[in-house]
Length: 401
Image (tube, rainbow, N blue to C red; front, side, top):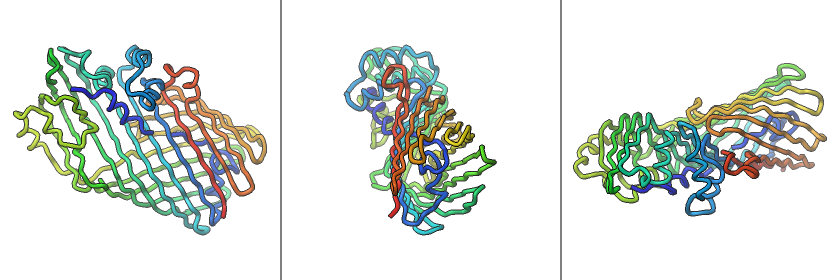
């Protein structure tokens, strides 16, 4: 059974979030506070992060066909009991139609993984090092999806104290794969010709051939509240959703199976699991097959508190949770300084259980009718690629027609 590099490559498809400050569209909320008709905001947000996988391995996936020995060794020497990985990418455009309504369109992809360290090594590097060994894990979770969406934005409130915006629309999924287990045990035969698997609470989706995998509702809300002249808070809740899957099936079982297929990638493969399992277990799989009618994708919530130190400098603290912490909780502390009414720079440091140490630099410049923002996450990866465990980039532009 050979999974190795392909599985890791799937996980790396690709978030950086601007800090809050006044009078800037990205390092603040002026785009929504001003709500100027015929204005447009375009953003691209890409990041990949892990608590254990180094950025040298990320780069290997992007530019090589295998892991470099030193990057692989650094990962194997790590002391983490579990390996977490989260990759996210999103491109979005929002247009203000009038003083109350706007429209948006986006495209997105996400990959999330959590599993025991030894099991992760088997999945990433293959089962050769585990010949005649039994690998055990308490649980494993993997989710991968991609799609596009469109909808409307609505100004709920806009005063000096409170700004509120509602987002609602539709999403169409073009890829969806979900796998989870409770306790799992894998034994590789002495000659490597098969793997015996014992799984509890095993659930895996079986992919369909249609271009659209599911269609669902998507809701979000942004709230910004000014407490006093120095303090303000912001809550951004995104991607609250319910998706109707189209002709999707999945397997749900507690049993033991023997895998006899060679080169089977149980996460990427679009065909049925059944052809890779010993034929003696076919009745078990048939009885375990069920329709998947509904699915929910991970939602994201950002809490931000901003404290003005003076007219030009702001201290910003933030907390982000993805799917109520299932795919990570991250906290950051940042310092923003406006060098003029046109240029602002924000630096932040943080830590997350799916990212490790975070270092982010963000800058925004305001032209006459154009705002441009760029943010880079994981700058320490440039200097310590085998130690850093995340990187990402955010680019944004706003203009008025």
